[in-house]
Amino acid sequence: MDDVTSTWLRHLPKAELHLHIEGTLEPDLMLTLAERNKIAIPYSSMDEIKAAYQFENLQSFLDIYYQGASVLKTEQDFYDLTWRYLLHAEQDGIVHTELFFDPQTHTDRGISFDTVIHGIHAALQEGQRKLRISSRLILCFLRHLPEAAAFETLKQAKSYKHWITAVGLDSSEAGHPPSKFEAVFKQARHQGYLTVAHAGEEGPASYMWEAIQLLKVKRIDHGVRCTEDPKLIQFLKETQLPLAMCPLSNVKLRVFDSLADHPIKTLLHQGLCVTVSSDDPAYFGGYLHQNLVETADALSLTSSDLIQLCRNSIQASFLTPSEKQHWLQRLSLATTAFQ
Ligand code: HPA
Ligand code: ZN
Image (tube, rainbow, N blue to C red; front, side):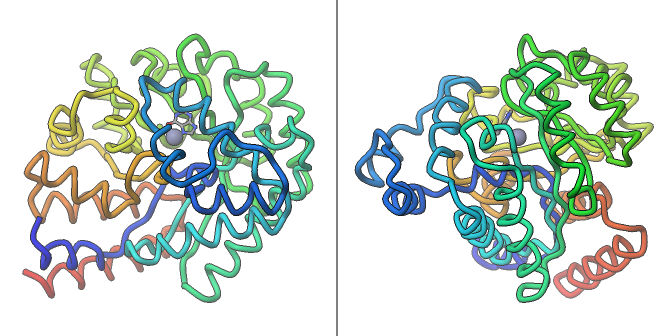
């Protein structure tokens, strides 16, 4: 992509919908926090950390990702992590972000739910004030753990309900279908949370149906394996249920051999509400803009494809209808200025 197009794309208003805040922990911050908190990690330099980021599949990434998160201890650590992400988001033209946090990754090692959410929330408020980036927070349950542990986490979230928009489902997909969490998602919906879930990343298309029918999700994270089921594609097209895709993640975790094999362009042209996000950018080699640029180059996306991806990101967000209208108008103005 040439510099003029890249700059144009960078400045289009867009939303990020699939971002794990723990996945924005850059190697330099990992080293700083390890030292600050006197936590031993098996790396002594940025180069050693980066060299470890060669993944065979989702699980080989998760093992390293959970170990990395062990340096996060205080409210200030969670604040610093989130603030640094927001500075990246600003660079990429992100006007609204919906980020995941994994409380169980922290509460299981003795860090309180309160510490985690206070640090993240304070940075998000600062992001709204100083960077004009709006945000929503999504609490993810770790699907490799029992449903009882998810119920316990939902209980811990109770006094922070007003800070949390939705619950989601992440971690090891294969062997942990959405049906395992039907009851806790039902309770979360009764309490007023929206729902999303990772499905169809490594797991089959049937997991996407389960997320839709049993967890009543408003959006699916990844969902790339919908291509195996024509009925599902038709359903996604008719309902415009959004898919929050992360192309660089999929290549890093070997879901596809290369970006050229990614189905996002085909699905976009079939009329599905597909979007691009960065997932775990510190581990997968790029934030949102980089995902868009590399995907555009590999699949020859046109400027109107890129505009549609930005439009979809706003449409698929949990913003109010009038907020969506505002950003869609701003997007439209920004694109007519270019053409
Ligand atoms: N998939 C599942 N769980 C995750 C991911 C992902 O891409 N990133 C962080 N946790
Ligand atoms: Zn993810």
